[in-house]
Image 1 (cartoon, helix red, strand yellow):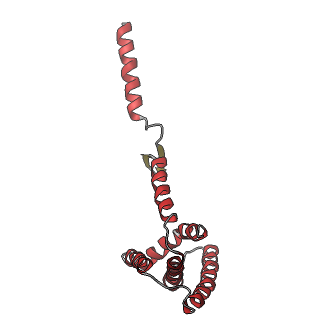
Image 2 (tube, rainbow, N blue to C red; image 1 turned 120 degrees about the vertical axis):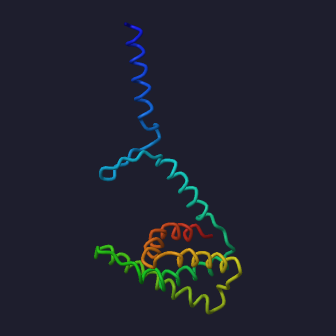
Image 3 (cartoon, rainbow, N blue to C red; image 1 turned 135 degrees about the vertical axis):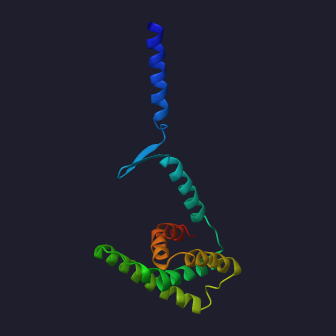
Length: 160
């Protein structure tokens, strides 16, 4: 009798342990759906990707060119298609767009004075950005680009 109780207890513990998510997993609830996933693993992977992008090194003249191209891109393509139903967020987007426009004008003056020449590397890297952007729906692409501003700003601040 004691042996059957011990066996039942061991079986119950085994079942409970296999049904529980691993310690590093998080259970997320989306309405009636429950999903167990390793948020720390996903965040660690994303952090590695962001760090790699932030550490992207270009020669100073190429960096000037890349920033010039990226600011033109944001002003000419991204901000025009970033509209939400939230007027507060739209005002914030407009404020950032105005700041980018001001910086874009300053970069254009620098570019016009031949202080910001474009080599092959920034031109090729920027073409890849455009290919990725144009592969998406315009509004989705604009919102995705807006969501990646933190990476751009970190990269620019890291500049020597």
